[in-house]
Structures are given as structure tokens and as C-alpha cells.
Length: 370
Image 1 (cartoon, rainbow, N blue to C red):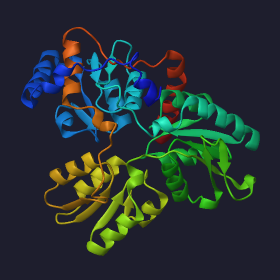
Image 2: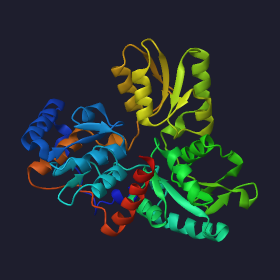
Image 3: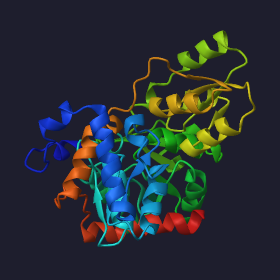
């Protein structure tokens, strides 16, 4: 399901206007009351990129896979109100038990990157790539992808990857087949492959809109086929941003997420997953100086949590992730009050036929990266 389908009024119930006019205090009190009433029967996972007004009520914070795994382990939780985006809630639904209901407070909370690879495009690409390269390709997908894409990968012998284990999983995949199709983020794929010693001239790009492979060399030299997708937030960090930091703050370290472009990752001092960024900042010495290239809500939180350090965003004009910010306090309260009234809204349910192969892709990752 892509973002446009999520916005289809026939499939999505919209929040009543009343919630927009309640005071912040009233909304916060309602969250506290309902959480107290339901106790361990209710769980609120919150992704690192969520707004402070929402994250303050999260029972656990983390990246998408970690949150889904914790939900899976929290057997008392009948209601899982996932404060993240759609593909994250899908993963939680696939990993949790049938009696557990996963709810997304705002169905408009999609992911532009995940939407850059839909199942029709992927099946069409696979067919053409098989014609070009025969049976020499294994698909991998970033967990920032739809359940349908995860299922496609699982069905074709591949696995999911996270930004933390992408190197491990790509190394595993290259032992299985000669070539890898990496979905949907070309930047994570390129940066990971390069770290493993694969030169840029062995990487091609598949354009799902043009339905064309972009590559200048000999076809037989292709080792990595990168899907032409990206994170609209991380792609906004630029070489000029780094040059500005180097000029203005020559003693400041630069740390970025591997969803940033190749040039930015190469110029940065450090690159790694969200957890890596958080851990690096928290464990750095007092007085250290950092420019961070990742989502703005998280950067602001790191600034607040580390007052003994000088921290700035690598791009000071960066906006928070728009789809992540769809989930706000009114939508959270609407979801919780609906549960309290015995009405489930915006429940995320992955079809069993999709779930089977998507979980297979997830389990292959867990088996080979633990």
C-alpha cells in the first residue's frame, strides 16, 4: 500500500475536528488517564524521529525493527499504538500475535522512500533484470520498505537489512549470488557496497520510472544494482553543508546517516545508523563538538540531552520528516480514546499471504546478522 492509497478517503477515517481544538494540557491528561487505565494492555512504541509532544508518552523508543521486536516480546500488550510510519506498523503487525492489534494514529504517516518501490514496479524490474542477467541476482531490501516488497524479497531468496547490519547482510548476499538488487534506497546500498570494497564502476542504477538500467560499463561487470530511491530528508544534506562546517567550525566532527549521498558520507568523519549516531554522541567527551546529518527531531533531542556538548544540524535549514510529523498529540489521543470506547481505528493488518514471505525475509536477516 502506498501513500496515495493511504490517503484514499474510502479507506481512511479522518480525525474529528474536535481534537484540533483541545488544549495541550487536556490532551496530555487524556493520554496519562488512558495509559493508567489500560496499564500493560496498552503499549506505545515511538520512533526516534517522532515529535517531542508524542515521544514523551512512548513506553519505548528506538528504530523501526527494534520497536517491532519489543512489541513482539510484550505479550501483555493487546493494543500497540505505533508512533512511526506505515511500514513500521506493518512490521509490528507481522511479528506480533493475532490477538494484538497494531494501530497507526494517522494513516497519512507514510514514508516517501518506501513509496519509491511498489510491488508492480519491482516485479516489472525483476523480469527485465532476469532477461539481462539471468538467474544471477539476489534481492535485498532495506526495512524501510512495504510489506509487499519484503515479501517479494523473501520469496526470491533474499532478506531485509537495517542500516546497522547492511554490511553484514550484503556480504552474506554476495556469497549467495553474483549480483545484488538493493531496494529501495540507492544511497544506503552504494555506501554499504563501497565500504565492502566494491568500486562505484561496478554499481548500476535501476530507474523504475524509465524502467531502464543506467550503467556505462560492460554489463557483465555489474555487481550491485541500486534501486533509484532515496530518503527525502537525508538527501538534503550536501557537500556545501560540510564545507560550511569545516570553514566555520574546523574542530567540529561531522557524523551522518548512510542514507545520505555518497559524497556526503565520504566527506563526513563518521557515518552510521541512528543508534550509532545516538551512541557516538552520548559517549563522546564533554565539550566535544558535533554537526549531525540526520532527521531534525532527533538532532534537537540530542542537543537537549547533551548540554555539555556543542551540537548543530549539518543543515540548519533542514525540516523534520514531514510524514513522521503527521503523528501529533491530537491523533495520538484520538487513537487512544477510540480504544477506550471499544472502537479500533486505523488498524494495520498485513495479509497472511504477504506476511509469510515478508517474515521469511526478516528472519533470514536475523539469522545471519545476530
